[in-house]
Length: 327
Image 1: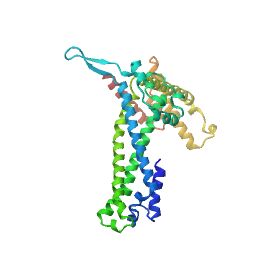
Image 2: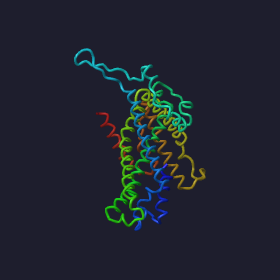
Image 3: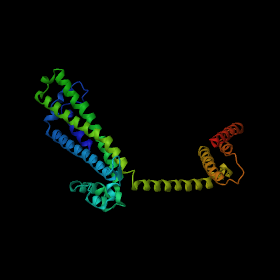
Image 4: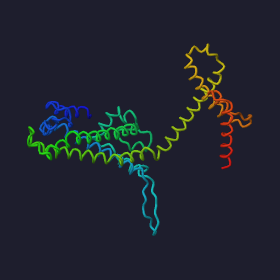
C-alpha cells in the first residue's frame, strides 16, 4: 500500500523539479505536500486505516489471550487462592465471545479466501479466532508483519522527506522565500502528527506480537505442535533411510558408468559419504549386538582424509564419548 502513497508524494517533488529532500532546490517543494489535495487526503486516509489496523490487531490478540489465561481468585480463607480454568472452556463465555465484529468479519473472510467458511475451527481454541477460522496463525502473522513495515516506512519517509525539510526551511529563514510560505508551518505540524501517529502504532507491535505468540502456543496448540514435530521427525528419518540405502553403494559405481562430469561426481561422492555415515550411525546405535565400527574413520576416509588423520579423530571421538558417559 505504500507504493501508491510514495508515488503521490514524490509527484509533488517532480512537479517542482526536485529530486529529493537532499537536492539543492529541495525547499521549492515546501508547503506543496499540504496544498496538494490528492497527497493530503490520501495521507490522511492511510493514517486512519493504519491506526485502526494497529488498534484492532492489538485488541484482538489481547482479547483472545484473556480467554486463554487461567483466572486466579481469592479463596474463602485468608491466604487461600483458587486457580480457575481458562474462560474459553466455559461454553457460555465462549459463545458470548466475538473477536470478529460485523464491520471487520467481512474483511477477514475476504483476505483469507473464505475464512471460517472454508477453513472452519477445528477445536474450542480456534473458535476464539472468529471469522478468520483456522487460518488465524498465518493471516495475523502477516497482518502484524505488514503493518510493522508500513509504520517503519511511513516514519522514515515522513521524517526524512517532509518534516526535516520543513523544519530546516523555517529555522534557516528561507520559508519566506518559498512559493507557499504560509503552508510550510501547517505542513510541518500536520506531518509531525502523522509521524507521531506512526510511532504510536509501531509501539503497539511488540506487545501485539507477544500476545500473538502466546495465543498460538498454548492450550490446544501445544498438542498440535507436538504432533507436527513428531510427524516431521518421522519424515526426516524415512528420507534419511532412503538416501542412505540408495547411496551406500555409490562408490562401487565406476565414474565412466555415471555419465556425470568429474566435478559432479565429486559432489555426489561426498553426498553419498555423508548420507551413508548418518544411515550407518543410526543402525549401529540401534543394534548393540553388532561389532563396533569406526564410523568416523570410514566417513572421513570417504571424504578424502588421510588414514592417520582419520584414526586420530576417531580416537578423539571415542574419548569424548567415554567422557560423556561418565557424566
